[in-house]
Amino acid sequence: MEIDKRHIAVQVWANLCRFLLGALFIFSGFVKAVDPLGSFYKIQDYLTAFGMISWFPFYLPLLGGIALSAIEFSVGVFLFLGIYRKVASAWALLLMAVMTPLTLYLALTDPVSDCGCFGDAWILTNWQTFGKNVVLLIAAVSVFRWQDRLVRFITPKMEWMISMYTFLFVFILSFYCLENLPILDFRPYRIGANIKAGMEIPEGVKPSVVETLFIMEKDGKRREFTVDNYPDSTWTLVKTRLVVKEKGYEPPIHDFFMTSLDTWEDITDSVLSDKGYTFLLVAHRIEAADDSNIDLINEIYDYSVEHGYGFYALTASPENEIELWRDKTGAEYPFCEADEIMLKTMIRSNPGLLLIKDGTILNKWSDNRLPDEYMLTDSLDKLELGKQKQESDWRTIGYVLLWFILPLLMVLCADVLLVRRRGRQQQKQS
Image (cartoon, rainbow, N blue to C red):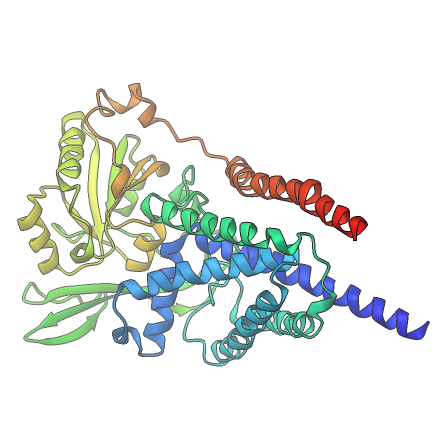
C-alpha cells in the first residue's frame, strides 16, 4: 500500500512538472516565433556582450533565434501531449541545464538588461529569470527521471503527424512575421499607442536622469560629446547613445527623440504635437536597409509633400552612410538622428514605415507591405489608410489557436476513433 501511494505521488509530481514545463516552453517559443527579429537582436546583444559578435555571419543569429523558438515550442507541445517523452524530456533538461548557469552569470555580471526568454511579452530581471530557471530545472530533472510516468494523450502511431505539423506551424509563423510584422506587438510603439502619453511621468515620481552622448570622429579618432560641449562641423557624427546617469521611474517610452540633421535641432515635440499626418521612415542602420522598394518610398514622400504631410527618415547611422543612401536612392526626404535601440523597438523592419497623427501611431508597414499609388488615391482623411488600424490581440490569438489547435483536435479524434479502436479490436481477436 505504501509503495502504491509513493508510485501515485511520483506520477502526480512528474505530470505536474511536465505540464508546467510544457506550458512555459510553449509560451516562450510562441512569443519568440511571432517576433523573430526581436530574438535576433537579443542574441546579437549576447554575442556583443561576450565579444563574440564577429565570430558569426550576420544571418546565423537570426536562424538561431528561429530554431530556438521552434525547439522550445515543439518540446512544450510534446511534453504537454506526452509524446516523444524520452526526446522531449532530454531536450527540456538540456535547455534548462544550459540556461540556468547562463542566467546566473547574467544576474551576477549584468551584461544585458534581461535575458529575453519571453521576448517583450513578459520582461523579467536577470535575478527573477535565474529564480524561474532554478524551478524549471528541478521540474526538468523530475520529468527526465520519471519520463515513463508521463500520461500519454496520443498513441505512438500518431506521434509523427503531431510533430510534423508542430514544426511546420511554428516555422511558417516565424517566417510570416519576419516577412511582414509581428502579428502580436508587445512593445510600447504598438498601433494605437500615443507616443507623448507613453513618455509622460506621473506627478510626484522621480524620473531617471538620462544624458545623450554623441560619438564623433575626426582624423580617425573618436570621442564622446554631450549637448553642452558639442563640437564644430569638422567632427563627423558616428552614432548617439543614451546613458542613464541616475535610475528612477522610467515611462514605457523613455528614449524617443528626433534630432534634425539639417539644423541639429530637437524636433521631437513639434513632430509629436503635429495635428496633421506624419510619415516616419525608420531605418535603424541605413547602410543595412533593404533598398528594393526605394522607388515606392520616394513616391510616398512625393505624396506627403503634395498633401502637406510631414515625412522624416529616422536612423542611427553616421552622416556618411546617409549621404551614400541619398546618392544611391535619390532620397530627398529629411533625415533625423535617433537612438538605435529605440528604432529597433519601434518597428521590426529595416526600413519600416509608421503613420502618426498628434503623436498617435495609426498604422505600421514593413518594407514588403508599403502602401502604393493604388492605395494613396486621395488625402488621408478621406481614405481608410488614414484611420487607425483596428487590431485586437485576443482576436489574433484566437485565430492562431484555431489554426493550431483545430488540426490537433482532428488528429486526436482520429486517434481515438480509429487507431485506438483498431487496437482494441486486435486485442480481442488475439
